[in-house]
Length: 80
Ligand SMILES: [Zn+2]
Ligand SMILES: [Zn+2]
Image (cartoon, rainbow, N blue to C red):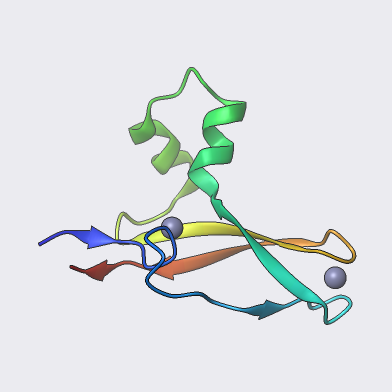
């Protein structure tokens, strides 16, 4: 059995409202993608340590489409 992120695998969607303007926040994907962009010299292991994310969670970056407010949302992985 594998632990997978339900959002990354399209199993479910989480809708979040912006705390600033109550607009709809959009999933921009797992934060690891962004860290890779900014720190290409880091291995995945180190990146996970730096970010402090347990391996049974996936952190997604949500961004408000109206005011650009962004927030990290921890998603619990599920067994498949
Ligand atoms: Zn994910
Ligand atoms: Zn907003």
